[in-house]
Length: 195
Image (cartoon, rainbow, N blue to C red; front, side, top):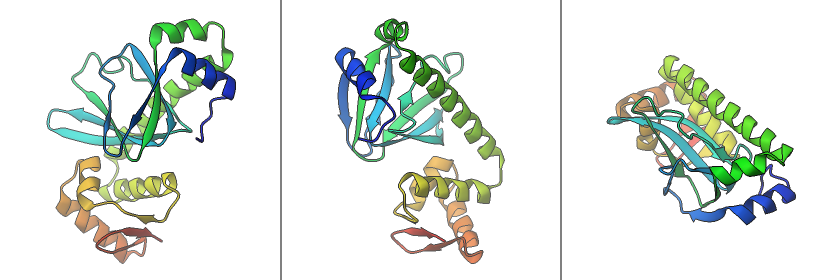
């Protein structure tokens, strides 16, 4: 596991929380806002869903590892979905217990404040990204995914990209072709290679 929690803090959290493993493409349950979730290992995708539409926001891994959306969108009808992109191990802890631990642990306090800031910053970046051109959105999305998985060869379908960016498949195909003509990437039926 590659995470930023010290062994001492991880042990403390494990004593008061529960570990759950999610398989690839499984939804990480955030229905109960009485808990904060830490990603100990794996990668998850965060999406914002409203009505029949969803938009990719950002990825969470064991480096930027805290899922802390408690009551962030309670005044509007937006749902946050988190989907494991590969086997993902989480630790969830009751917020009441977390508050007690925060009073005595400076590392945990710093970690939570930083996580909330990162979540908000990532959401703002995603919203600004939505306002940029489709070509920039797609290129940034592919680069981010490549950096996250540490590869230039992405095994991702056009339909998954279309769902994440809330764009029609035809638009994704057209923009991928445009990016390929500009020598930013090379496409094959099974993968996209970033150049």
